[in-house]
Length: 468
Image (tube, rainbow, N blue to C red):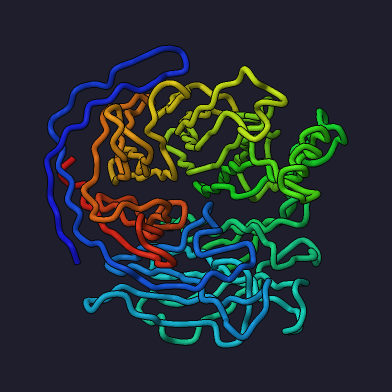
C-alpha cells in the first residue's frame, strides 16, 4: 500500500472549438493517493476480449464501506471463444480477496457489476449454451444477485425479461447500468448488426419494460446498412436512459476496404469513427429519440472511442471521447494533405442538441505531442465534475510523458484546472466506481484497471479528492 499527498497547481490552456480560453485561477489543490495495489493477474484468452473489454460498463462498485471488483479468468483447458469465467473480489482489511468464481459456466467477455444503496450487488453474466468443443454459439444472459454483506453465499439468479426469445451469442457487446439510489437496472445486449435488445428492472425485481433499440442507418455507404453501435456508455436516471457509443461495422467503403486488404491480408477491417447518441425520456414507454451523431472522422478514416457519459441534475448529458483524425496507412493514397491529431473531446448535449464543445487536450502534427488516452468522469456529492485521464508522448522539451491527470470542469463546461496525480504507476485504462454502475457520488476517486509497466495485471487505486 502506498500513501502520498501533494499540493500542485498545473496551469494549462484548453482549446475551445469556437476559440481559445484560459482556465480560471483557483486555490492550490490537494489530492492524496491513499492506495495503490494489485488485485489479480490474468492470462490473455486470445478470444478478442479481455478484462477491460466491457469498457462502457464497470467492473468496480462501492456499496457503503465495501468495494467489489469482478475479474476475468482464462480457463487453460478450454478453447476460445468461450474460454473464460467470471470472478468476484472484495477489498478487505487484508487486501483483495476472492469471494466467488463461476463453477459451471464459460463465457467470452468480462462480467460488469452494479450496486444499490440498499446493499444489493449484481453481476451481469452471459454463459454460453454451447458444447465444450464448439467455438461459438448461443448464450443465456443472466444477473446474479447477492447481499453485499454475504457475497460468499449463493447468488440469486435472475433471467431478464426479453421481448420474445432473442438469439443471443457470446459476442454480447452488453451494457449494464444502474440507478443505485432508486434500485433500478437496465441491460442492453446486441443482436448481430441490426439492433440491441434491452430490458428494464424495477426496485421490486420486476422486468417492467423491454424492447429493441434499432441502429442508425448508414444511407451514405457504398451499400446502405445499419450502423452497429458498440462500447456504449449508458446512464439510467429517473427512468430516463442515455446511450452513447461508436460505430462498429466492417469498413463500409470499398476503395478503403480493398486498400486495407493489401496491408493486412484480411477481407475485413472495422470502422470505429462515428459517435452516436440517443435517449429515452422514460424507458417504461419503450420509446427512444432519433439518433444524433455527435462526432465523426468518416472523411479521413479516423478513429473515435467513447470514454464516459454523465447526466447532470439539470438533465443535460455530458459526453467524453477520444478522437484521432486519420488512419495514417491510407493518408498518402487518399488524403495526402490531411494532418494527424489526437484529442480528448467533451460536449454537453441538451435534448439532442450539442450546446457546448471543448477539446480538453489536443496533440497536433507539428505541434503539441502530449497525447491523452483513456479517460473517465468522476462526480462528487456536490455535483462537481472531474475528468481522470492518461497522458503519454513527449513534452515541449522532448522528454517522455506517462502520467495521469485530473481536470475539473465548471457547470457551464469550461476547464477550471488540471492537476497531475502522483500515482507510482499511472493507469493506462480503467473502470471507476461510476454513478452509472450504481455507486454513490464520492470525494474518493477509485480505479480498477491496467498500469504502465505492468503486464497482465489488474490493479486498484483510491485517490482522495477532499482537498480540492
